Image 1 (cartoon, one colour):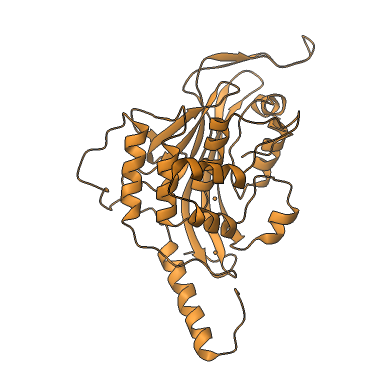
Image 2 (cartoon, one colour):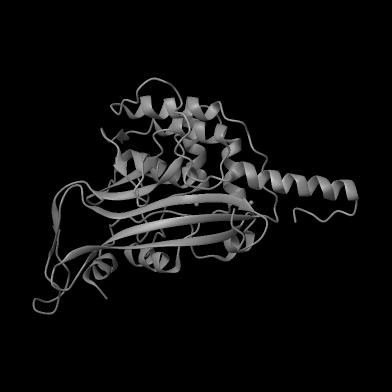
Length: 326
């Protein structure tokens, strides 16, 4: 076990990414870092009528095609105006304007699957104090209607893709009411081990979960972006950053209320699609492991700007069966 893994086990205040489909190793990391709050990505029915069956087949194929998010970097930007990274509200409202002009794909069918390819990069620390990174890329298939996992899983932040898709479509235009709605969708804690979050912290965590769910209708994501711009403490980094897959991204950030890190929601600077999420050290600090001297690792110094965890959704698509790729 490297020292960074041990650090994550001891740092109860360290944030971890929220995602509806976590790799097993990442889930263990999350549960170790915050044992009280797991932290942290379409046959509706069988029909006998030939016409109805044909209609369902066409809808399934259409859904797969329209929801495929292959990384097309050649598409035009939302407007001809240069993108200014000086105001989070300006960026997010411009992103919303662009999304509102997109066509609306049909909702996936209950028997379909959500395919995603995700790249993750995390910081590591060796026993000799050497710092490095660990990365992996994984394909995932999750049922659009994954009710069993939602009902019996241990991750209290887990919602099925269908739940989030429909909840997002029902969110109101008013930002304050929208934020209240997503806080109800992803409640905060109410115990000593899982204490309540401040309203702004809760809103940003919950909205990152909604924005990062695949798929989400463009108009719904536009409303989410407009509401995100109203959360206190939300900022935009004044330059493009790199996501875990090496792509340029806009970073919408907010410093965590507890700890030394900031959460960053990453957007495509051309299409404003959701690209991923990062956790970045916001201020220099030194972590000291608990325990007796001589029986614990040496302290670890963290520098502002250091990326502790980054996740990028490289591909997303609605498919008809597990194992199918677009």
